[in-house]
Image (cartoon, rainbow, N blue to C red):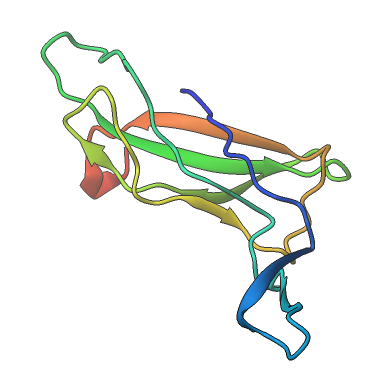
Length: 124
């Protein structure tokens, strides 16, 4: 599994000129603020070159996301992806989002567990 980082600006404000200048020819600027509902952490998942336990069997892959909070040291199941069937290189449509109010810190550990689902009706 590979995690790729996308750069994001941490600036609280950006300024864009408005289309019209005032009477003195100076541009007026509009402030753009970060909205309070932006996620604190967000990522998508993909796997590459997974190996099937049996040579001719196609994989049905699911990723479970769990969180270990620094104070608790216990594993908490957070979410999981959809099952992607029949490929060694699944790209999951379900991303992982931690909202801004979720208590996540630099010391918080995120565990990603990849499963090969054998029987969807029994979740095995």
